[in-house]
Image (cartoon, rainbow, N blue to C red; front, side):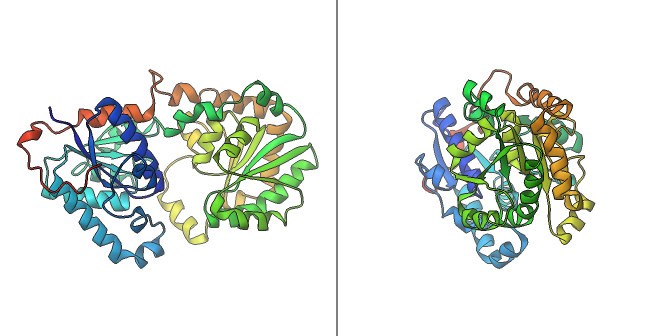
Length: 397
């Protein structure tokens, strides 16, 4: 068989990171693999030549999407046309379903012989479950990051789905504390990791609540608040933190964030992927979230899961207490956080629950998610490659 030709289409930075890791894994398994499609800086470092800059399509939110609708539609057409002309052996779309699914639909209509793999399942298990069945005509296989997603697609009539593992599994060495860090978790002032979110709106809604909550805790037990700041929002975070009734140590960068996790006694966090990082690090946490009234109105009618916290969904129980909207107050957060710091039944129960995360998320053979994903992608390669048209390869890496 000739060297595989695999087209990757990412739509934002997180997909670019997944794409870069997948490229490395594919080259390790099939050294002559050639690539084309759309990616960002991480994929470029692997030698990928993107059809256009990722920033053209990395847009989130209804209003920004509407403002750039003409550009987005043009890029969808150009991406699909490139794939159709290149006739790769497989197309891998990576997350960002608003962009990548539109590309996949066009490719399937014009070139139905090209296998299409969707790397990262949309949250069909949480809201708009009919999307799972709607994916079947244009998606051949889904690569799931969460262990319960294959069952969800089966139940909802979605495409074939394989759990390949969350990329955080590849960072367990960065998340797990050593002996000195374990000892630090047991020493006052107890380090409390504060994570108010990665988006400006989250930060501005949660920081005015987090500060007073931590101050209430500090009246009962000696703590050190450590806040790993998102670089692009650091100035705003520092401005809001100046209004807190207690000091906070603000750190920046991934290395400092993971160092804070390894030493953390407990955490106060916004709902999001960071809760999975905390769970894998074995840090008991209280989770909070606030959205606008309009978003709350929509969410209450569409979201169909018993928790918005990823570790809780993986564990099948609400191990991490969560407080949303009106329940997200300084008093409720402080009352839930205090026993996680002091110790006792609440802390012991959550620590025991988080200890099960490895058996539920780590792949049976201890392999990496990128390698598992690459194995599925290579298994999907189109047969009789030599017989297919090969023109217009869009600049393979």
